[in-house]
Length: 399
Image (tube, one colour):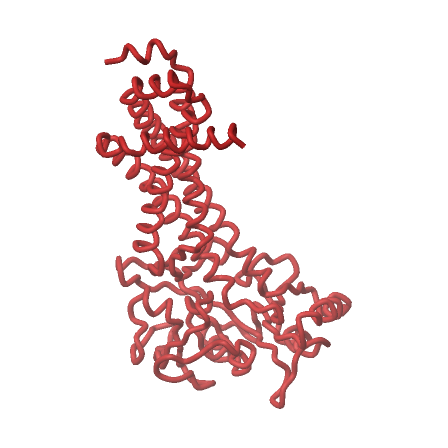
């Protein structure tokens, strides 16, 4: 027990000396800590954009909701279903029914331009035509201001995300769409999901206004249970009158978020990687300075019988401690600055704006601190090896 115990005592002693010299190196230490904090803040902040966008699309998806589109379509916007096809889909087995009928909502999408509140520039916004049953299919939708639209009237309700990002969408405002004027009669929320970036109105009125006839883009249906999806999909694929595909809603939104999520994550990781390289050099400079300032002290300890292992680990421990402090600081700054911040960006698969809130999750914070620790390890490794390899005689001659 004396060998390992003595080694640990040496490690504790050398580490104590190392950490005790930090106040004498406050400038270089502060530069390293704040450099790492900046890297972590940028990494976590950028990735929170991607995470918030993904959550906006997937948060309201449910395992018992199925989306039906034209076969070969990769989004609702490029799909087409006739009224007869929508009726056949609604009659398929595996769908939930209540006293008012099948929970299947045939929906029409139109892209319109509206000015952003922040810049005044126009951006694409989805207006979705839905039947009354849509509110029973999407039972998480809640009116938060005003009232729901009345079927058959030129009335619109607006998602809270769209209302916050675009002008002219307050309750009581009027929009000119096509040749008609439409009144904003309410706002709604939908569990933070993609629907909050949309405008909703009666499907029949929207078809008439845009001369779409009896046509739709998709059918959203609530299943009897998540397990009924296979039965529902098989029934649609066997029907010779249909040329459609069925997807779970959560799978559809996961695919819709993929392009933007990967783009933001890739760019954020690249930027953080380049900044991290600079932080590594900062940490190297700090730790080399620490070793240089303690050359005689380290040589004296080794002359007294201290091994190379405790010396190496003490330098690494200081580097990791500084990195941990920087990572914690950067993660805290990212959380305070970005979490919950609301913005809107283009969904390149639907060509419309999606409003979302940045989301700094515990997983992102852990990732940021892990990255900081990696920077600290690289920044401390080579100075630690230099300290261990420094000849004792040379070290004792240092002034």
